[in-house]
Length: 217
Image (tube, rainbow, N blue to C red; front, side, top):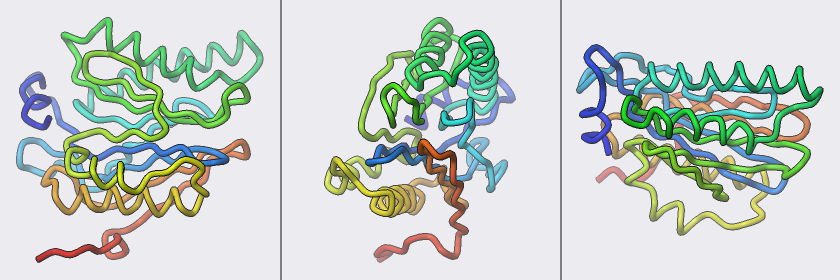
């Protein structure tokens, strides 16, 4: 995935080279990501915040070109603010996901953007959506993306279960992202998490010296 994404970058663009993740649990969703931004083998930023709020209870996780994904997130944020003014209520997560899908699909030959959208709304409660490089939209109980995700599909399949508690989901997300960071050279730094529920958003920060540890040989 890293090779494919790098090949699609335009001159001077920076690749997020990343591990992103979203997990649904009983009362809400958790989004998580590492913090490393790479330009080839050079680490351009080791403390990037890849968790981007597009509304009060909706976040997106970005992978691919940093410029492309920031631009798309800004456009979606604008339209969701417009929705709130016109409809007098918070937008559904599905609406945000469909905006991302439309922008990525209509510009799929010009963008390098893999995005996970997650949040809480009064219609469906917690929900997680993934939009891949081609612009297809899928709703899932959990989603992983970025170059580091290839290392943790087995771990996620083996450890995820429906009806997770908040504490279980936080532990699961931390362990999955930490495992990806330990294997993927384009992922690293710290772990940032956002817990999104009906009550609001709770941010968590896991510094490098507090990351979950695993066998290192």
